[in-house]
Length: 334
Image (cartoon, helix red, strand yellow):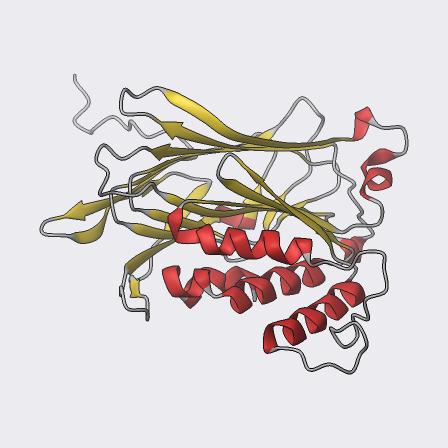
């Protein structure tokens, strides 16, 4: 006798987010599907407050139980059609639970296709690896080159960061292995791909004599921010300019923002001096570099909240993220 019930074709951990453009020009979440341990939640879209009044959709990336146990695998595919805008968020740090050994990995893979004139903002909470956890993830961003000159390329503002574990339990980079890879590709009209950026971090306890903590030099969080495309071009320029303005060895009196300490200074300089003082208090170390149209910002801090406060203050001060994507994009950094 044949089975009267449909055979399940879904695969555990697989998810699809498809943000489509319906006639005449209305963005809609065409598909939001997921399977355990992945869960996706999409609240009502919002409109930005700028002149363009973009309609921005949001999807929260969650896991059942708040984290990944050993052997869990997540495979997420995200597609943005032309002129659409998507925010990806989390509702807290993704916990990585203990593994029985380095041979049992938790894995996460996200592949994103960004069409012309669309924009993705992905500013999650940091990943939190517990003691003896073992995890690897990859994020691949495919930027489709427009076929006509009237269109612009897609845009990215994506953050990848990890903390040292549960400090209250005495954990300090106590996991077995943590790996994360980010790639940005251009997809040409003939569908050939050109690699723009590959950023890779690998922290393995077996690769160093004094453990991962010895390599981190008392940092509790380490992160990478990647910016690309016209929507976030001014933000990338802001980070590179601010990095050039960091304190160097010399006679400048940064307490006042002037050489003598007596000159009047503009509001931007006053904000910069105030931020530099806070960076010093929080022990934030950071750098910014431009590579093939991408701006890559690396940062670390002795406390997670210090790193969170630093990044949030810079993004709010410059204003592009709020203007282009709305205040909701910064929820995980508050």
